[in-house]
Amino acid sequence: MHPEQIQTSLGLLTELELLGNQGGNSSIYVGNLNGERVVYKSSNREDAVERVTKEYRNLAKISSRFSDVVPTPLALDSLSTGLIMTFERGNPPKVISYEVSNSMLHFLERLMSLGESSNPIVSYEVATDNVIEDIFGIAQLTKRYEQICRLIHAHDLETFHSMRVFVERYEHLCNQVKLMHSSKVILSPSDFGIHNILLDEKRVSKFKFVDFEYLGWDRPEKLVSDTILHPKNVWDNGVVRSFLDGAIKLYDLDLEYLQILLFFSKLNWTLIGIRRLIHSDNFSTELLKCIQTLEKLDFAGGISLDNTLEILGMR
Image (tube, rainbow, N blue to C red; front, top):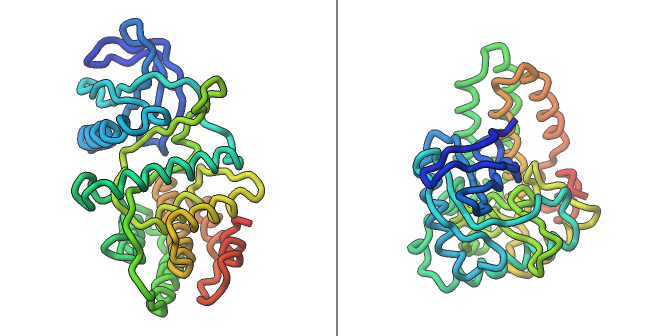
């Protein structure tokens, strides 16, 4: 149930329509504010003020360049901790079709050009959960695992121990790999997919991209692997490979590195999902389901990208 109205520092927001939900941390609404229709993004994070302020600044930087495909920030709402933006019609697409995928790639191309015209690691911050320092993300996976161990009940520890085994297998794979060169760094929207896209069939630029809370510098292989395996991204048949081919061409991706980070993203999203399940009555049952999906993973090196996608259940 979403609220019927929200009191903001600019006035009462009424006639609310929920457009999207970002994993329970924030929600996007369309509403009426002082006679004008606006988009309102609310946040319930502990660090909501910091995150919303960062997103406001990020959106202000890119909206002047991409006003046709992103909303324009109008104001920060200090009263209810939210962001007020220009009104955008539409709802998120249900699946990523070829048309949606092509629009995503076009947006990433424009964002890459914006990043190339900026001073590296100056105009924008480093993306949250980045792998710039730890290129394989091993420390991040270990940290997530240890955080969960401190939260779950003792009787679940034995079941969850197998998750540690998968992290160790991934670490062993990374230790066997000697990358010929370091991956480039690009400007990434980070949390990228259909849950952050609004569709309006009546507009020329029918796809609008929202949610730039995590915009920042990251590696393209990380962005692509996260997008492909994002739990909210439902892909039409054949579209994953089409998106991947386009991203490989756009970023000139290191294919060996990409395969490794596909495994990283699978483990990372699983750990994120488990943490969100911790307070659920079905935690043990859902945990077993998560582990069963990982038991099919083969962390052997030297396999093809197509085989990797098949192992990850993306073909």
